[in-house]
Amino acid sequence: MKRCFSILAMMVLLCFARGTNVSGNEDNINASDGIYGNWAIEMPSGATGWLTLKKVDGVPQGELWTVGGGKKLLDLAVVDGSGCSFKRMIRVGAPEYVGGPPTGERLKIHHEGKLLEDRLVIKYSLPGGAVNGYEGKRIERLPTRPNLDLLKFGKPITLFNGTDLKGWKPVNSEQKNGWEAVDGELRNTTPKTDFSQYSRFGNLQTSTDFTDFNLKIDFKVPRGGNSGIYLRGLYEIQVVDRDSRMQGIQGVGSVFGRISASNNSGKAGGEWNTYDITLVDRHVTVVLNDEKVIDNQPIEGCTNGALQPFDDLPGPIYLQGDHTSVAYRNIVLTPIVSTHRDDSKIAVMETAFNKRADASSFEDARKAGYNAIQMHSGMPAGKRIKKIDPSFNLELATDEKVIERWKEESLKHQVEVISLCAGSLNKCEIWGADRELAMRIAKQTIDACEALGVEVMLFPFFGPSKFQTGDETISGVADFMTELLPYAKSKKVVIGIEAPVTTKRVVELLSRLDYPEHLKIYYDTGNLYPLENIYESISMYGRQHFCQVHIKPCEAAVVGDGKIDLAKLAAALDEAQYDGWLVYEAGKGGKEPVRNRKKIQKIDSLRTQLKVTE
Image 1 (cartoon, rainbow, N blue to C red):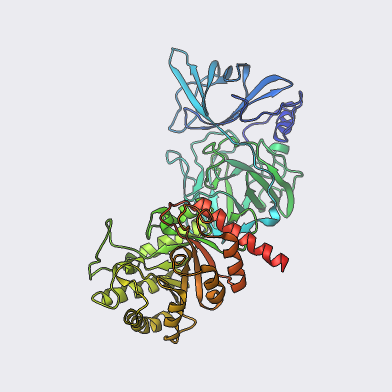
Image 2 (spheres, rainbow, N blue to C red):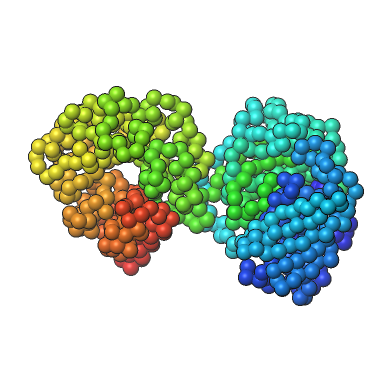
C-alpha cells in the first residue's frame, strides 16, 4: 500500500507479523515487566501510533507504527525497566492542510520515555527548543484464539443502500470528497494514481461503530489501483488487484503490513472481487473470492492509517479514498453477539442502569453482556413522582421518532426488546380515580409493543394499585382487565401481570378471565420470597402461567449471595419445564448487571447439568 519495501524489509515485516524475529528469539514479556509491551498512542498530529518495546536475545528493540510505515526505534536504551530513550526520523514542518502530514526533511529527533503507573509518557525537543510529546496506554495481551464454530451472530445490517451515502461520513471533512453512489455502487473517483499515504481526497467511514462482526463486501479497482477496508477503523484489509506491484504482506487479501494472505486469490484490475471477513477477539479470518487466505490469525496491532489505536474500543468501517479510484458494493455487516453459542434466554431490566425509556439503555445492556432487555414505557419528567397528571401521555405514543430511535439502537447494539413495562401504572389507582389515565397508559404501551414488534407488556401492581388478598381489589383488577384484554388480543400482545400477593391468589384471578393465551404472570423471585415457597410455586405454576421470571437478589447485591438458592431455583425451573426469559431485576441491595448476569447464566448451567443426570 504505502510504499514498496525492499525484499529484506518485507521479510522482516512478515516475520514480525507471524510473531517471530529473523535476528533472534523474542523474550517473553508480561505486563509486570515495566516498560516492555505494546502501547497505544495518539500522536501530536492526531495520527494513531502503536509502540512496541520488546527484548530479543536480551537486547531491547522497538518499533513505532504510524502513518508512513513501521519505524524502527534508533539507539534504543531502557533504564531500570521504567525509562527509555530512542531516536526517530520524523518530519516536523507544518502540514499543508488540516489533518495533513508534517512537511520538510526527516530529522533524527531524540525522545525520552518514562513509565508513570499505567502510562508511558514520551517527550522530545524540536529544533528551536519547543518540547512536544505524547502518552501511551498499555494494550492488553491478545485473547486466546476464538472457536469460530461457537460464534452467535445477530441480524445482518446493510451498510450501503445503493442509492446515497446515508450512514456514511467523511473521515476528514477538510479533504475533497470523491465518494458517490452510482448504479448501486459506492464509488470513489480521484485523479490520483500513486500510492502515497496522503492526499487532498478523503476517506469514508460508517456513522456507526462496531466491535466484532462478519463483513461481506465486493470491491473493484482499476489496474494498478489501491484502496483499503479498515475494520473498526483499526486494521486494514488490503484492496489492490491481483497483478499489483504490492504482493505478500502488502498484497490483496492481507492485513496490510501485519499478516500475509496464504495465496493471491485476487482478480485482474477492473474485475469485481468479494471479501468475506470475520473479526472477533482481535483475530481475523479472510475469505477472498471463496478462497480462505487468512485463517483465524491474531492481529498484533493496528495498521498504519488507523483512526485510533485502542483495541478495546469499537470503531467504524472505513474505506480508503486517498489513494486511487475504487468501487464497492453489497456491503453487509453481521454483528457477533456472543463468542460462545448460548441459546439461553437471559435479559436485563432497564432500571438496572438507573434509566427509564432511555434509548442509551441498549448500549448499556450490550456493554454489560446482555443480548436482550426489558424496557420501561415511560414516566413523566422529574424525580420521585407521587401523582401523575390525568392528561399524561407516553412519549412512545406521541412521537414516532422515539420508536424509530429505539429500533435503530436495538439493531445497532444487537439487543432485543423482550417486553415493555408500563411502570407508570405504579402511580395510578387503576380501579379508582385514575382508571381512565391507567387505561390510556396501558393501551399506549400495548401500541408501542405492536410498533416495536414486542410480544409482552408487563403490568406492575405496586403503589396505589397494589392489590391484596381481599375480593374487593381482586374484583377491581379483574374488571379493569376485562376491558383491556380484548385490546391486547387485537394487537397480539400478552399482558404479564405482577404478583404482589401469593401466586395461588393471582392464578385465581386469571381463572376469572377467559384469555389464557393473553394474560400471564411475570414472576418476581425477590418480591415473593417473603410470601411463599418460591421453588414450589415455580414448579407448580411456571410452565402454564408464567411469561417471564424476574431474578431479583434477596437481601444481597448479587443473586445467590442472599436468600435465593441458585440450585433450588434451577431445579424448580427445570421441573416446571419453563423455557421463557430469565430477567435480571435490580433489588434494593444494589445494581450490578454484569455480576448478576453471570449468576443467572449459572442457573442455566445447573439446569443443563440436571438434564444430563436425568
